[in-house]
Length: 603
Image (tube, rainbow, N blue to C red; front, side):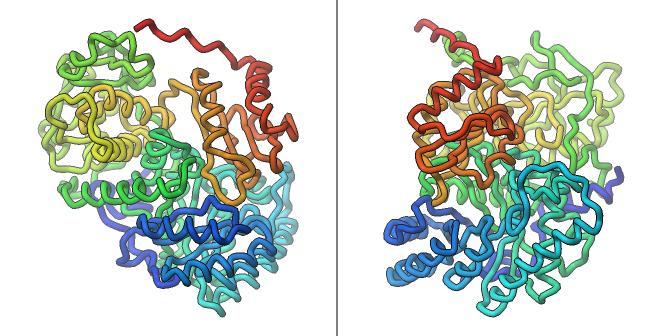
């Protein structure tokens, strides 16, 4: 791969530069251009309950939410958007509303009357999604596209007439059969699905739209957005539409925040993204401070960092559009193997190791594995060509990292190191080059979230590109919390699965059960199943598709009824909700993936 090819999605891999876009106007809020990155969220209240929706929307706006989305499942439900809008405006709030549309073009045609923006999902807007395997002839493919166009053009025309905006929002979990059969369940399929709709919009003179490429797997999400930007660049300068970023079904708690930061933060760090939503399986109000903190973290690091450019751009050492782990030799450091495809270990400082040494047996899966000061790691400034050349000249492979105090963004610094360093040398990743001073029992919540988001963005971005053979979190002063962040980032980036992995969608008006309570109940029953991935979906909209990587799925099928899945296949139907978690456990046992939880360690 040439450097030019690799840079198609990003002007400079070694220095922050925000992608230039046109402006999409959503009511009084501009997205893209010179506008700041906007924060969005989605109502969890039933769209039929106008009072509840108004109350929730006002609370979100007060918390700093700049655009509010609300689901509109049917035309009749969409009619109630008028009352929601009127209630919000009567309260003196001008936050723009977005109608979320799936499956029903007539719902979109009703919703566009009352809201500033309509989100359509190309995979299920007047398109087939039955997971059917079929070889399409060119004529059959064109016939389905023509039908989809006939359903979509009226909405485009209404958006033009009413001066509305649109999001063409592809989800990895809801690609149409037509796209799946021609392009596969891939980032390229996601991009092609969105571009079909964009071409129709442009052919009808409509440009007030943005794109999104959301997935529950951060690697897939990152690759899809990069590929979209590369394709837009190839199509020409007037295809510079803004982008909405989000990781679908990120989950709750620290896991949800980390997974969101891995996906969203890594793209923002490359200057990609004009509006974000952090999708947590929590009350929507909790999404806003996380999104704001994530944006602030990326902006702060961009301002503080120097440039990694040293004359001409060095060759790119990874494929931005397809994951492959960087090849390095395997070393044994402190009795632990790393590099050469070995599991990525967690490193900590001697001070932190000593602080937790008395309770190592109680740390469970969050134990430190290597002491930094005893690792023999070589620290360099990657801009120092002589220092890097000296390492490359060594006969034996060395563990290498970037020196503390280096004035570079960690993502740019480690990319530069990986580009200049011979691949045989393993790399130790750091979240920051300014370690927190002192050892504390627990940092404050605000500081901890800041440390967590920064570590997830910087370490996660590099791990998703296959760079990194060991990790250390230096920005969090509390030993236990820094270790927990390290392991959870490895899990979110998909490079080390050490506990049960959950794909849990946020609540919305489509949800058919209490997602937060149910997710916690499922966690309580299955949280010890290391390596098992369980999807918890409130409805069928993204269910089977987003569960593509999951082993088992728990999906709302009807009010009070649950369908259970193995992979994408529904195997148990209409189970009463009160029995469903127990039946999920039975299903896991049937497939040989169950084992009993270990006894807790004695205190």
